[in-house]
Image (cartoon, rainbow, N blue to C red; front, top):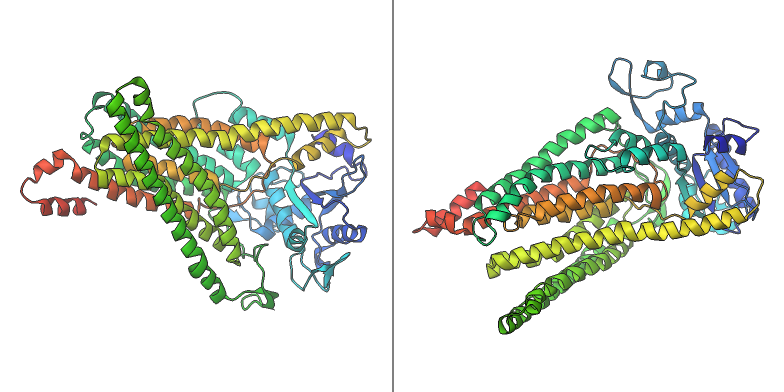
Length: 594
């Protein structure tokens, strides 16, 4: 890889391509010249002061550019974004160029002081902070309006002139990471520090949480196996397991906070100052003055946004929740039909038929969750939130409310309305196992298979071309720009959130839930690692100090788990026998335990 970089640029042997910019085909020459000039211009002139080179291919379209930066420029960028590094006295401090020699492992000729992920994050920050000065339009595109302070990259994206910006893989480092991460089957910890150096903190925290949650499930699984074996037919002997369950669901999240804080302190992100958040690319409005920054930018009435939320989004979500409950009642009708058929025929076929309604319902739940996700994204985008954090919070709230009701309403109905523990165990097992199989297929195996097919076609195409440019670099960029885009950890955390719900809410009546969760998570670690390294383009690193709003989501589920398990304990015959005369005493005791 390094050989390719050096041979690619002879005039500047230190030029190291870190980020790829792909413009739309047919982009006008004056637009390309203006953009590249703004990228290489000095900071004093409003530029980013980066290095940029066109990637010359056989087509000679010059719509792909490679962006890098000098070591000196990257160090100044590290100070600008507020990176925190370890000092020689083992303390953690915000990096400054003037005090650079006080930081551990720093040397003027050590180009590994900043990780490649940090360098790419710095370049992304500089590109996103390229702002219009006196320009009123993007040269060559009169319809693409600009105003002083407007992000040039965001305007290019929204007008379709800029197709994508993505960081390049380092093939040598990726090969090493793949070998230590998932290249061989082993029982042990993931190389989180290496993952962090390559992919950044946000993705590493997800894998750290996945690993931690898997280890936390092991005590539940170890207790669950003998509990399942020796009390299989006695559905009422779940008091001890439920007691352990409600303690477990609370303790593991508190321990994770400490574990997370230790990691992020070591990485320096725990102490990083939060960057001022810019308006998200999809935000639109009339031009006005931002009262905080004093800059001219789009302004949108918060009253109009609230009207959209409460008069359109909220009724739509309620309608979807009603539809989910309607589908649930159809499922119970199917369950009753299967049970009646089994009682009439008493055959092997009728016994298998008892599981069919639950399997169908599990598949329908997954389909409804995915369709609703698209609708929620459209609605949240239509609400026109100014900040990305606000957009994400509203989207997560919509998705979590629907997914919680869609996945768990039937279990609550069986447990607290039908009081049928046998059906609860069967439904929980079917929903959990079916959802895990579907998720593994849809999120890992199918994308990997499609990417493998596409890679073979692209390699044949590249070898058939003749070009004087470094073939390895051209081939790499051509392959990576066609790879899928990783849109973040949203779906991954959502899957863990639902799994946590299945295990913490009702696993006392199906103790093997934790066993299946452990097995799923082990394969999930390997499939997600494969997905990050082989299926998707390399995502930009995003410094973070925690798993964000998902911590609150898991804690909310933990509270619901405590309430649910306490009620299940109160419903058990063993506890009811302790209060033969007064049900009010039983209710008060359960409430006190909660």
